[in-house]
Image (cartoon, rainbow, N blue to C red; front, top):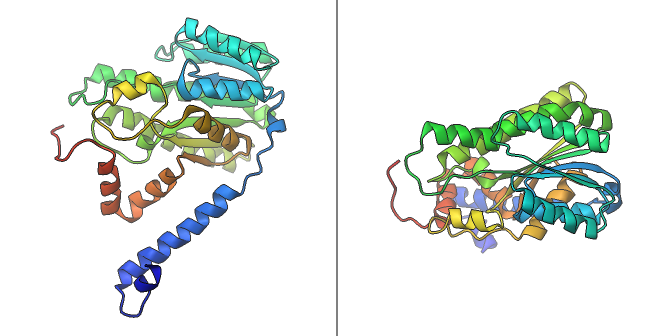
Length: 302
């Protein structure tokens, strides 16, 4: 019990941890209880959204459509992209355009942004959600595979941001970056993928500071999510992790709320926020938490 931990004879270190965790609990309650999200603010907003063919990206598109946003959608597979576009129109999106694009090709991101600018006349939101993942469990990664992952999961984000930033500056808009826990807490069997996600966090955290110094009113919202709710993600980590996929609609709504309120960070599920904090403060506990999500009991060779 808390009272026992705080008694005069209690271990000081344990008491400090109890007080710390209690304070964090109160902080999280206040943080998540405060919600000034106004759905009307997204009506007519001009949104470029990537990675919409399935999972959270698809649900993001449907939420924006219901809220009356003007959309440019992109994904790799045109047939799936057309289905999502059709559904968005049925849900009431005033304008929906699409462009099939392979973000693994360095020349593509700039073309996608220019397409969006031509169709919408500018951007209020750039929502970066696309990803590419090599099969989990591969212990030896080739340099070619790592380069592909970095282009897909990091460099294309940088290119899209660079191309869209002048328009977002004019509109005082928002950058919403959908990342994962692997960009904050490293784990086994995912080194190149995790490296790309760590690079995302570092790049956009630094960019946020640069924009603040330059008094550029563009918000950056980093979203730390769990396993994506899509068949390819689940298949990729089958037998490796115990983590369940985050429900697409709920996770997508958390991302949209964070972007619309110009929050600096979104964590879904919320316990990921605590896990990220514990990474620095309690390294042994952090390792224990991570091990609970992996289906391994002994260290594996790299």
